Image (cartoon, rainbow, N blue to C red; front, side, top):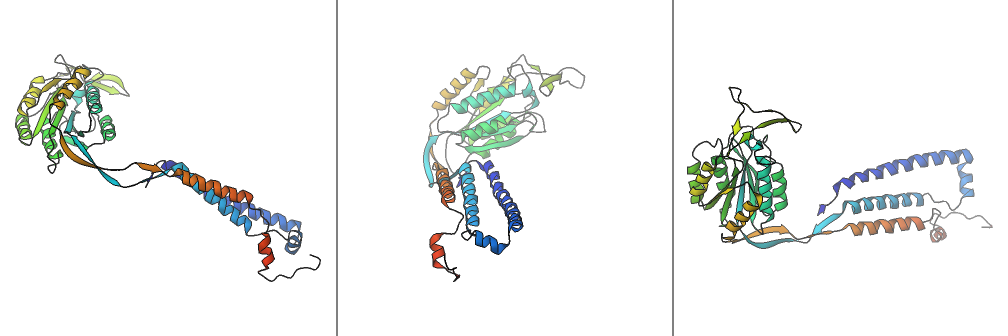
Length: 348
């Protein structure tokens, strides 16, 4: 069972608040009656007054309030865990989050363009599974292989250039991490998309790409940026304050290095794709994915959850109706039972 709107549980605090107000009212009522007449006189003046009914009515109101709150929360119950057969490809997106990806030589900047490309590719997928890796000077797993595209877009949106402290573009580390991302128990076809400007990549990336190829991973690289390049802005509250400078005080110009990315794609049986035009990238990716054989795998997921709020709302209405039609006086048939052998006055 899941609770859809947990925030409404705070309304349960109304129950002790109502109970406290009722106690204050009863204390005031008792004092007011004691000023009006003695207890035995009050019993004579109001012989049918019940001391139990007001408490029962209070209980009904509190139960109705609790039921209404649970109706607002809307508990949902899933029928069973079902296994769904799917066919697809396992895809890992490795997104460069180094500081050079803040360059604005491609709008709005390289990182936002990369996220836009991944978002569009995921939106065009069918039943493929996806995972996300972020990397700069080191690689960091963001999302393991999943069919939950909503989660993928959420984690994708959280990517930023401050999430990894070590700077650089450790593409080799991202490839190494991706090799362990795929499930060896399910022999699915495996694809990796690397989105980067290719700068400051370190060494041994060709060896890592070769290892990925041997592990059955096909790597496609998407170059984001321009060979003309641009400066790296330093912003405060979204406003450019300055540009990154080198040790000599010169403004650093970061440029797309397609050669490195082309070499990685070549070593891993993939292809280099220019990331300048989103429509062209997604069209090329779809074309490549259609040429890859889909593999059957199993994905377990819960069946649809059914809302249960109507039961709680119905219970609340029933309790309130009982409260409305319940009088505070003693019930006639209980009085006739005379359970306590009370002596009746002559003339009654």
